[in-house]
Length: 140
Image (cartoon, rainbow, N blue to C red; front, side, top):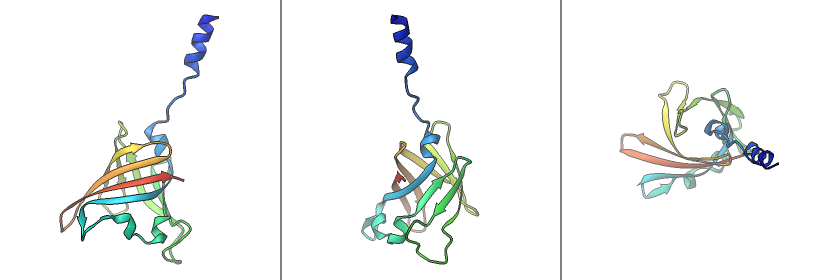
């Protein structure tokens, strides 16, 4: 009986989802900051229109990304959904590479990723300098 009890304890252990399993699904941005500040602003999310704040980024299991305009569309003539390119997760689950049609791949550092929340960092260089964006998303 002791052996059966021991076997049952180990067989009931839950398997934690992989980073890929956590990533697949619909995500909405809830916070977006930038550093250093531009024109005194670090809270990029506060500058976004309401119609952009409800947009969804959908990471599909086949490695494609779909963008959904959400309930509030910024332009009625825009399609509700559109292709956002492709995504690939590193083997260690610490970086995400996104490729949009006609653009160079963007490499994103995964700060945290669970089945309900996702925090990422990415660095962009433009004519003014280097910006680091920290973006927080929640699964919908």
